[in-house]
Length: 421
Image (cartoon, rainbow, N blue to C red; front, side, top):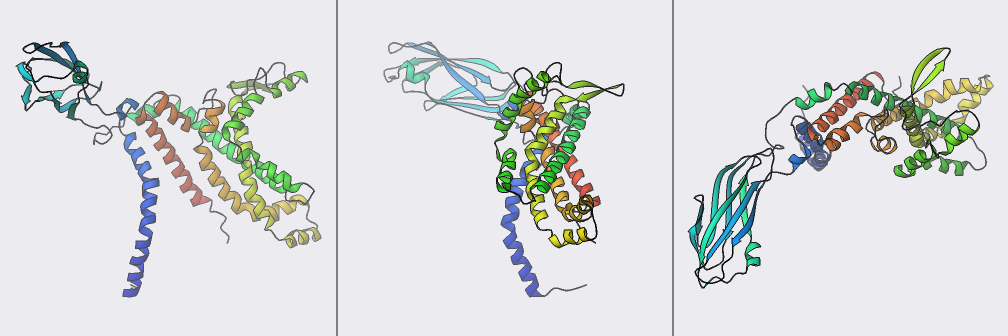
């Protein structure tokens, strides 16, 4: 076994010391949210549970004294703010003004140096009660009714935090996986991701091939082709919705006027349209296809930039030699261009697949996940916020994480990133 010198060990320790801050930053930014998401996915947590239960105490004055020796009667209206979780070891501390002598109070309360203390062992969920206090005032009592009702009451209690306890369950995963719609959503997610990724790569390759030629205005067109990617998503989504509107949209109006359509199509709101091909009827997913088209159009500029940069790095001598040998343009593309750009296409496919799989804003802005366009990321939002079930939403997010991890493992195992023999 090879032994390391003391100097090498010292250099290794120094290197680890320099890497430690970076590792800590990566851990805090990337791993901590992932771990927290896994943690929550095994708990039945709702949005209302994020606000921890607390004891609430309010003063209600029943009889206000007017002179020395009069009775002063007030109540504590107490309650547990939670509808699900109990409170334990509750203590109420209320500093009373001078001149108040105890006449009658609850057995759980005591007066010490003008401080009224009430101690409770347990308040169950939805707990409510009124506690009566009766005092006699003397000449030292100078407080107004307003000041007394606004006096500070200190309340403390112990409670079990559902986010930090060690009670775990598989209910969220059972709920998600047994939902009849889950596998349809899963299929929709893969179709949207795969076709959207391939569409953006195909358009990017076509645009890169087109603008790799020299002609007047090439620089302007290159800048124009970047517009879908750099424009705000809410702006381009609104534009598409406006143009494809079934009632006032430009596209539907034109297609109806030229006789291509008998009636307008609700491209973002119609789940299926029946197509008759060679006597066979088939359901075509209209809304999903439109969303995929938007995804391909919006993100092809990224592939276009990377592929164009790689095309410009290919030596012209290769094409000149191929022309001398009589290679056609298609043969030049297949045997020169494609092998040269396969590495960058492989990288772009991996990145775009992951990004598209995690896409939420495009679908949410275009369809809201309706008409057969609901993906797993939209399901995370629906479960976590629309249905206020954070545990189920986290479970869907964990499933997304697992599927993407499996995809990356298979990808790197069977499709190396442009490795050459």
